[in-house]
View 1 (cartoon, rainbow, N blue to C red):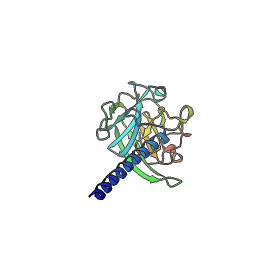
View 2: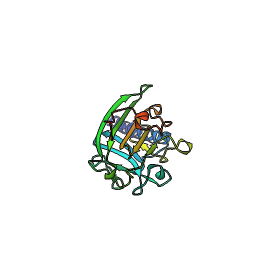
View 3: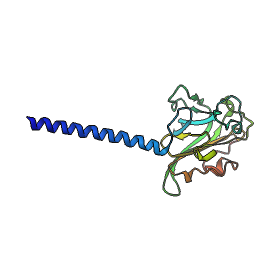
View 4: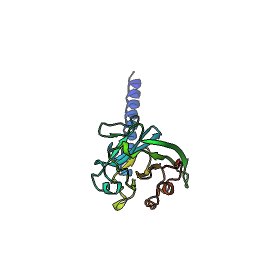
Length: 200
């Protein structure tokens, strides 16, 4: 009987050890990535109807004018919204949108949305604004714009909103190489090739 009790106690100790190890590994991963996911400082792409974007925090703001600490926030579709702190993208924000997954130049997975938008449906945007770029690895020190922003499930993202286009695009990448930051003035099709439906 004593042997069985000792065996049970040993098994229980090992079980909790592995639980603790798994938790520690998860915590370590978060430390390595260096960022905690903040519901108002993140994007995500699950589908064409389940996603989140970074937009200006203040109403009727040009993308470029929002690019300062505290000037940006997260808006999500009704399916994508996980916090009341997140703004709501209306169902008709995209007039046409393509959801695509793929494999990048070094084999990393990526997911993206490209298409035409109705900027007048989101009061954060100015329909006449030429637009600009948000990303996870740009900005001062490569800390992101907005700083510390993340894409759920991926290491990097790049997003452009071009209200005057009227178009938008976003890609989340396992490999930062597939989310280029050096084409921000060249427009969505050059940064994120995809279907743009001849937005006009």
